[in-house]
Amino acid sequence: MLLNHCGSSPRTPGEWGSPVPWCQVVHCPVLVAEEPSLQLQSANTSYQGAAVFSCLSGFRLSGRSVLHCTANGTWSEPVPTCHEVLCPAVQAPQHGQVTGAATRRVGEAITFTCTPGFVVRGHALAFCTHDGVWSHPAPQCVRSCAHPGEPEHGRVSPRRPRYHVGATLLVTCRPGYRPAGPDRITCLHTRRWSAPLTRCVPAIG
Image (cartoon, rainbow, N blue to C red; front, top):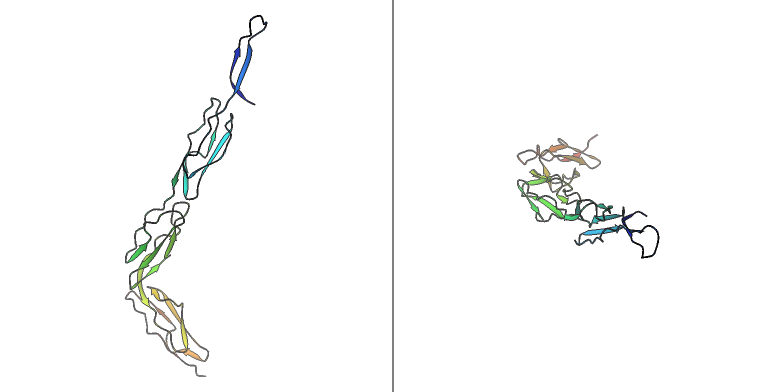
């Protein structure tokens, strides 16, 4: 055991010999995690002992997580603090809205929607992560085309309520039928399809 604060005491009258030596064990003050979000995981207050701190989920530690008891009976660093992790504020995309914009805590979510005639390109839902960043960047609201309907004796894919500019639809016909025209159409910047939806006609031969 390492000791400190050594000294000597004089002997009583009539005793021979040198003064009696003495030493006191070094201890650091007892630590307390005063913040509700700060946790004291362990603490050894003797010389060279360590105190370990952490924060609750959703908070970030500011300062040293491990403190050491020094030879002069003081801790090597101040007690750390915890700061709540918040994701940055998010603005609504052009031609769109964001719901939950005031929600910025870890685990909470925001959603993006677009005004009529536009569709979300990207992720419509984002979560605030423990790193203080959103799980996905804000999407774009791009011009869109409405679903063109389904051809008789066939179907289109992929099937969605709306399609962003540049999206392509594939027309497939049931067995015994074939496309009467182009089997692919593309959503244009005019919010119209590149061609009318083709029909599925009986396959001959």
